[in-house]
Length: 393
Ligand SMILES: [Mn+2]
Image (cartoon, rainbow, N blue to C red; front, side, top):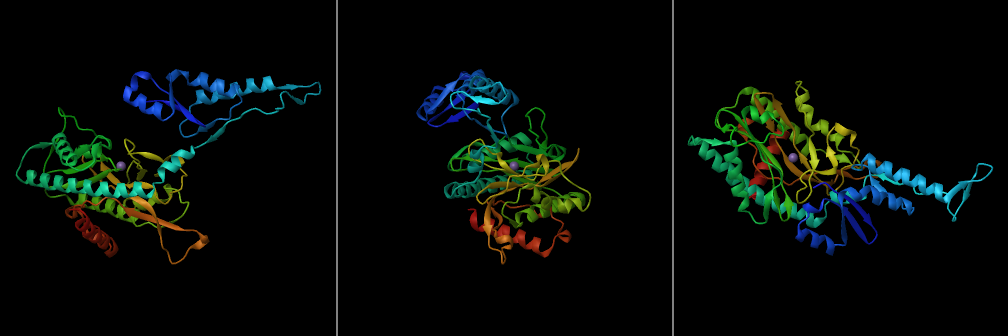
């Protein structure tokens, strides 16, 4: 739903269309000290707060112009009431005040606090990722088997079956977003959603991209794997390998505290850029709990000039890709969290940070052109797969 929220000392007011709130939710909000108000009452509430001289902190990442304009003109009226000019043109106090409220315009401090996960939240993320990995391993084994038997499966059939495997895992609540199940050319459509009447078949002739996630009671997953059940072309292998190199480079990045995510974006693109390739989406987003698979304020993207520093405890996705229009799509996505790294130096007297993986699901080695990989990259992949083997059962 769309809503406005005003948080005050001792309570909060939620401005929302009443028909969207079930009696159960209403009771819960009441217990939490949240009062409900009609959605359209927000502006009159802002006016009345300004008339009382209230200072309001507006979250600049989401506040709209109507609210700010309403507040500012109400503040002007308030000032006219409490301050008048004397004969010499100087302001004269009334009721001991010379200045009214002006508002605070900054990103909400709540979003940063929420983005930095505590120990229990991180443990929940780790545990739920291992259960999700078990479901995915069963799913991929099933799919490979079916395709080898020439069973005809559509993109929707495959997404439905994946849901069945996930539903068997402890704490499963729902998918964390609509599954992107794209075979061949459909894989090149970044936010593709297959429909039963029109979707393609998943077969041994095409690359298959599957971006999916689950909401568990203790964590949220978001993972993309791209596979080929037949013989990939050398073009597909080269592109896949360059995407993998970007994924590895970001996963292995070590960077000083206070580094904004966009600085790391180029790490994930470098191998593609070398041959004049790129992808038209960000490299990573924050991940939160329950229906919040895309959570700010941090991101790993060159877009929007996001200066939010990556901080210890933040969860982010690492998802470089490559899309050849009308042909195929590739994306390799894991989630990771930001942790402190022990470096031999601490230049500038500050700490250095890196990533700890959350996702443990195999990456298809058939799609790799080994001649492009360095020994370090090969070791990364072998080490990753041995961790998958050890952790997921
Ligand atoms: Mn994602």
